[in-house]
Amino acid sequence: MFRWTPALAEVIPFPCRARIAKVRRTAQILDETTPQGADAYWERTVSDLRRQMQAAGILGDRIDAELRTFFDAVQAELYRRGYAALAGSTGDTAA
Image (cartoon, rainbow, N blue to C red; front, top):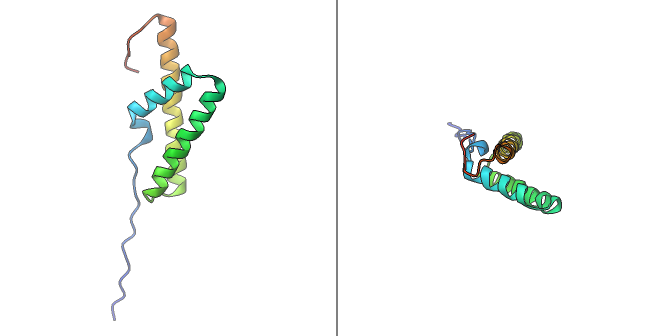
């Protein structure tokens, strides 16, 4: 008589770009290690983030978009760190 179907819902992740501590820590490690170490750390970080989002039920396209925004945020932090070093700043300044 009645056919029940579960409601469809999209899992919306916390934006990776807003994970400020993770962005800053990732940029710091990438900045302070060898190129090989930085590559290995980056691959591990992206893999871990992808696995966490997959486990939460987030769709593949959304995961890819989130990882791109995380990449952009880390790049911006690396630029900020480089600029601060050139300017002689030793403190943590707002971006």
